[in-house]
Length: 108
Image (tube, rainbow, N blue to C red; front, side, top):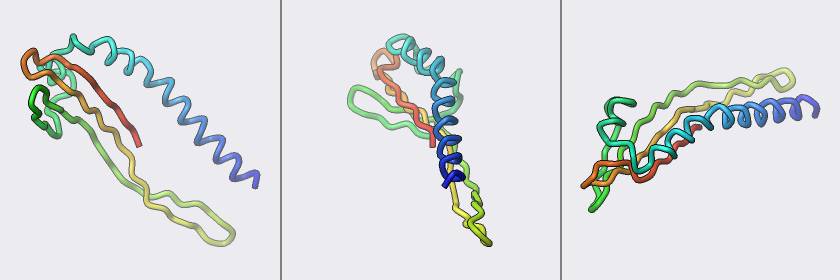
């Protein structure tokens, strides 16, 4: 039981640390709502993975994914679980002004 508690503690601690590391990134994006142009975003993150047009806005997505496996020893055997991880940044831009209106960032 201690082993599982330790694993839980390590994973939750890593998640909390990652959120702390991302805070400057989130602050920068929040400060740029209404200020960052689509061309600025292209210069910063390169060619997007997807672009979807709406009536008054367009949504642009950048991201990356990868996969692997994790093995956990249990008794005399090892249980292997496939895992995937990546990130995705969605940004909505006004069609007329081409300025960012909103953003969303996820990691998994």
